Length: 73
Image (cartoon, rainbow, N blue to C red; front, side, top):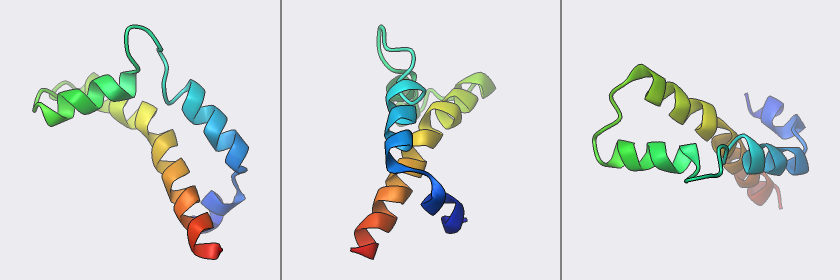
């Protein structure tokens, strides 16, 4: 699994997080809205869970990539 993450260019991951990870930008990013719903115990509908995974996955992959880069240096 980490071999695949290591192959992703860092710049591409940052761009994916800045676009898909934050879309839609107005009134607030979906990932932020879904995280607030999760913290408030309001994340119950399947579409909301899908949105959290869909918009949160780029951030998770970026965090793993940065963690791997931090360990390598």
